[in-house]
Length: 117
Image 1: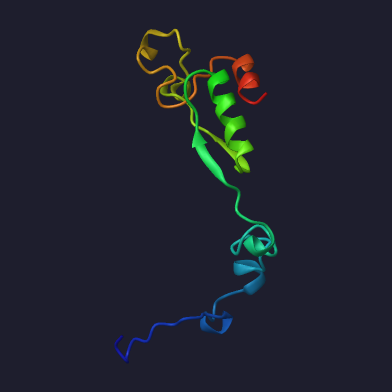
Image 2 (image 1 turned 135 degrees about the vertical axis):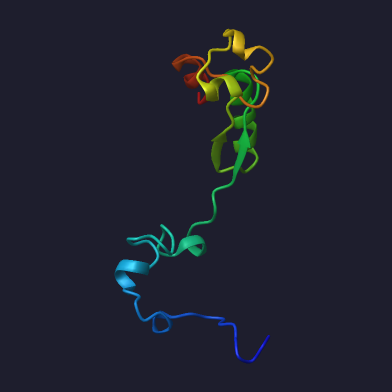
């Protein structure tokens, strides 16, 4: 590393004269949440484990979610199929070949309820 351009390992408010600590940075768990949403961050609350998952019909993905939650997953992240993302029902002509392919097909409130039952 060149001597005329040393790399700082730790920066403090003293390094940024225009910094208004409480307004611009703040403590973890406090507005503006620049340093995270929890006061102790991941030393006190581990990361949520979420597999991006979804396929077939709501029933199929529901079974997969229950399997994942039973094996240590702590959160859910739903992958929807292309027709669902584009706002088409599964029986729409533009949905042919894409239903349940890249995620779960959701056509109704009933499908969503079945997904998370």
